[in-house]
Image 1: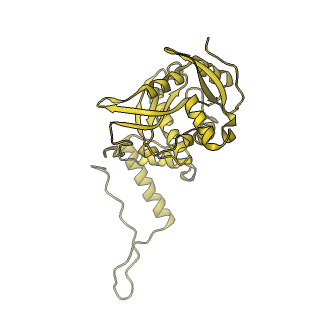
Image 2: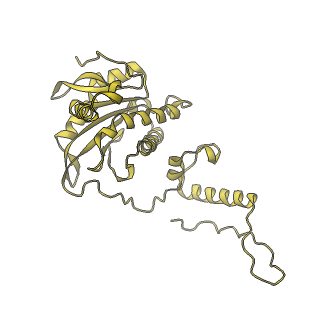
Length: 281
């Protein structure tokens, strides 16, 4: 909450009526604009946050939520799985070229903020409960554990499509330092939790997919804003449950190798949809 803030503006009042009854506040368009400017200025001074230089009507809900968030209140996200072990969907995200392009902390802070903001928008557009997910930061990316009741199939094509559209809009006028390019891996399985975070063979396999050289090369060659890779088991389940490839027809098989994982079969999605034959050597 705000402390030591500037005193509030007096409410504009109508003059008393002929019977001396108490007047009610009278707001004009100018009064509202002045009050809004006072609120925005006071909050910006207290938090150090700034909004994109654009009319309020053009700002996204995520931008406004981030600007007005009360950082002195605790984040009370419910635990996605109250037990110590759960079968759930896990998503790993990595900012492509983070170390090469983001050399100073100010740029890193901005790009990380944009990553989380765009992810929140994409989850909302895909009707996935972003606020109920467990999110563990990885510096240049994140591990996201969905609530156990979330259908892992909805974290494939639906989420990929919305995130690609949102990134395309974000990058349209961004310079190289501000451009946001993401790699995302999706898997499912049992995840365990201790005092330090979540872990399991499923999360280990997830990050092997994310870090596979063939995946990085495919995204680099396509020049796309987003690349998604999923495990063969999740892709096969999605196909079987959907009665065929259907909306998953844009995925292409990809052999991946990373550490102890050798030439494992995975499935690649890119906005262009047509990259095949790239393998780890």
